[in-house]
Amino acid sequence: AQSVSQHNHHVILSEAASLELGCNYSYGGTVNLFWYVQYPGQHLQLLLKYFSGDPLVKGIKGFEAEFIKSKFSFNLRKPSVQWSDTAEYFCAVGGATNKLIFGTGTLLAVQP
Amino acid sequence: SQTIHQWPATLVQPVGSPLSLECTVEGTSNPNLYWYRQAAGRGLQLLFYSVGIGQISSEVPQNLSASRPQDRQFILSSKKLLLSDSGFYLCAWSRRSGVGTGELFFGEGSRLTVL
Image (cartoon, rainbow over all chains, first blue to last red; front, side, top):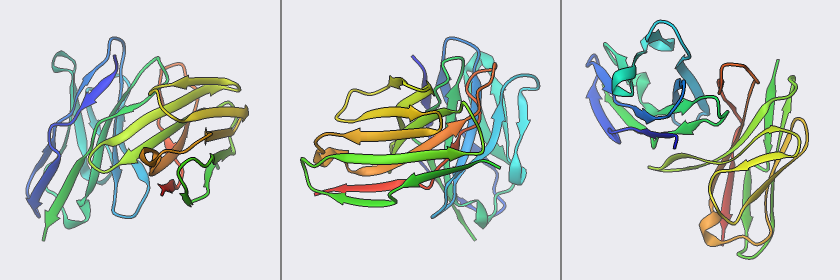
């Protein structure tokens, strides 16, 4: 079955700290992987996506994620977070089934 | 450009009453359509998705149903609401592609409170 696991439910960082949010998935075929972000009071928006090719994917606002097939992982990273990165982050997995399954989300609070 | 509209934005309904949430996409054709429920700490739960008119896949057994009467219209319904149906419902669409699930674009959401 298609599933996604996000290990960190709530992360608190100081500005300029590095960020890594874990995401592991379960899917039996070729995967499409996504990270979405939801800023307070706003809609979900796409941060980055992986379909194929270079496993290191760069997204908006300095975020990147690395697809490691052997570990079934797609962790999100940012070298130096800002207060404006405070948001909820969702990992999602899709594939040939046309359905997109989301993880439970990680709430990131960045303290100035 | 493509837009997605979802209504009503807020709904307060008594237990046992019917429900109809509507979602319409403009500016594209043959989209994949989705209904999710978002709850704090539980992420987005996929309820239904559709790859074409009249084609509905249900992900979670529940008190809700979905219909797609037109290509760009997706409706979430219930005949009798339960307290547990309260939540935030999101409609989304994606383009058809040959590489599987594409990027989803979300509506504004509908907040349902069942009393």
